[in-house]
Image (cartoon, rainbow, N blue to C red; front, top):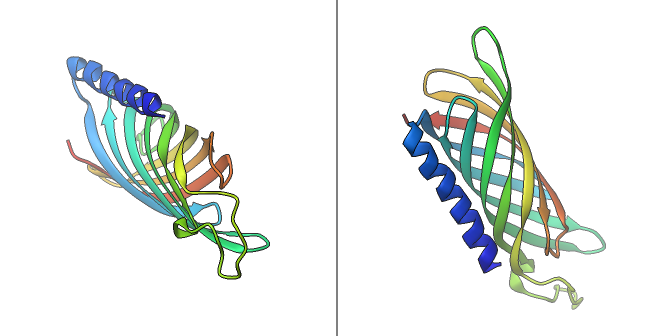
Length: 181
C-alpha cells in the first residue's frame, strides 16, 4: 500500500511539473455531492489544467452509508484520488458544454460500524475497518456558467481491491467548479 501511494503521488507531481514547463492553462477547485452506494457522498477536487483538453485532478472523497442486508451496518469511506482527465467532446460553437473521461488511483480508509466488530444485537461482523486502495474510471459533464464557474455532473466507478464493503463502488454527484486563474 505504501508503494502505491508513493507511485500515485509521484505520477501526479510529474504531470504537474511537466505542465508547468509548457505553461498552465488554468487551475480550478470543485465541490460535488450526491449518491454513493447505500448513502451519500461528497467530493472536493483540485484540478491542474495541462491544456484546453486535459487536466490532472486530486480529489478527496467521503461517503456516509449503511449496508441494508440482514442487518443494517453503517460504514464510511474516505479516499484520496489522483487522476487524469481528457475532454472527449465539447460544444463546437460556443464551448459551453463539455464531456470529460477520467481514470486514476485510490487510496484511503473504510470504517465499518464505527470500528466496532459487534452489532447491538450481539452479531459479529466479519469485515473490519482498514486501509483500502484501487483504481477508478469516471465521466464528467460540464456546463460553463460564466468565466470562472461551471456546473458539473460527475459519475465515478471505483474498484477497491481489498474492501470488505465491496469491490465495486459507484458515486454520482452534482456540483460546481471555480476557476482560480
